[in-house]
Length: 344
Image (cartoon, rainbow, N blue to C red; front, side, top):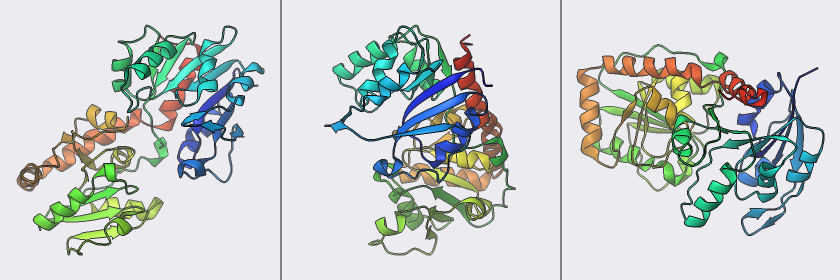
């Protein structure tokens, strides 16, 4: 019999989160509640193994969600309630004020809203009755310690297991620098900058991989040194990384930092874009941050790589080594520390 019965409230539990939930379910009797992935253009797993799952129906007014199950389920026989932090889900957030249950707050905490009301509500919620807070990254912790004295554990958000760290040998850099970008097309990711780069520098060959790119680039002229591929997974994705020398990320970065790390490719990131918490991995591994809005900066960086190609291997090695602390196994152990009350 597992020692802890845990209720975990999150917005969505799509397929890329399922491996972590299954891992955590090995150690605790886990019940997860969330809304259907399709409501956020996400794909839910076909089968959930190792944990119980309660799907919720949206009851929404404006942007706020009012499904009272996110509170009343906590009245049942659970030892610990983990509350995924979001002010848009108020019944869930009221769990943070419970007196007779162990409650843990969890999440990114900081969003795009910076108005005084949001700041005031955040201070109320992060200083409520929960015993501690689980956060996505060290950057979040550094901000949060200024607003609360609650103990904080960093779990290093990821979607990959140890078994998925498969370092690939780096191809020799000859006359072309092979650059890839992988992800779903979104304006905030600014991959048009890579099209402009390919257009202005024939020393590089670029592959853009992911859904929506082909449609977004339909009006652009084709380039000999830029290829577009649809979504790639498993062996096909591995083949793209085998071909590559490194990853260029000209806008907001997310799980692409993890993909680069697990295949042992360095990543170059635009410092002036809004990034997901996964950027912490690139910071920890001392990756290069270059302003992609300035073509001369990128060209100078490419010049450096051709003159010092060993930098590709050195940067990639650091990133891959840091990936050890960004696996679902590590993440689950951090959650377990909080569930056991081991906050020190």
